Image 1 (cartoon, rainbow, N blue to C red):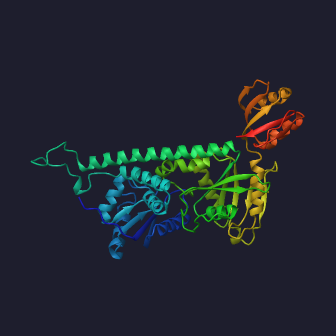
Image 2: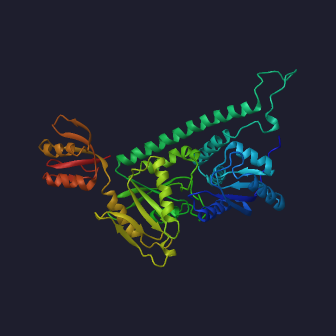
Image 3: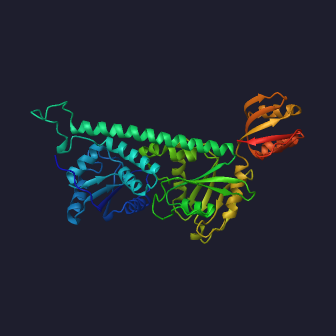
Length: 440
């Protein structure tokens, strides 16, 4: 068996067109991915197929064309914009005499260079090990079974088996550490809920301008770049709305077409910020000709991580790159804001966005502890009728202590209709006939 080629940056890129794909758009994104990974693209080889070749993915004729390009240009690496099976990767490396990397490996490599926090590094390492584990095969000379003899006798475990065992052990360790991270995040979210501070998470296709928008809204200085996957580590900051009520804004990792499942699994703790948010700001690059396709791809990932039911507000960013666009709020037939046009770079439309966020959050159920006097039995019955009551207890004075989940505006309306006044400030306890609402 051949020895696997060493690492290198000089690369041949291979991208095939399959039925139902947008060849040119995917090709340009692929070139940008390779650039983001630091590869020097010597050539881009294209083609079309109805389905992948079982052995080489690209077919023998195209493989010979790639091999000739590798030899002629002295390439050290061949990158495919497709997911290769372990056997296809081995067969191609043997034929091309160069290291082969598929789309999943390329994205993992970019993530490895971007991770800065301890949590981010753990998540990337887990995803890499899960990917590598499927590619441990008897293809290298050091994987031969240990021979018997004096000084060499023992359990006879192959190096391959040792590698697999070590990877399994490390994966188990990483999962335990990430579970601890997940628990800490859950406690932080619970604390924010107790203090009635809703979380708004920024999601969107990579390079849509999420971090620039995050900085513009919060006044933070989180790293922002035009490179793909510039943000891997979730950043959380407080931001006051116009009414003075604070919210928490979370900047999350960008999504991409065919996001590797290993990454989705590894970044579960980070992506939970999106799943558990009160509102998602789906940031869209308004200047991207493929923006509608990007929106659909982000929606697919949101559904995959269990965030499909979270309320969302679309934010069409980068309107400064489109002369015909102006800052504005678009509303649906019921008058609810569903899309805002802004420029995070120039600040145009940001006040409209804050207004839309406040409006949408007013419709999001918030968990509150209500202390109702005995004469508020009608209000209590209405809360039960709305299926808003999560828990109830009765104190010695006959007051009802209810834990409810209801939008603030709806709670105010119910109390007003019942002839009672509600104070939603958790720091003030009002006497009857007012209703004390301690936010959770």
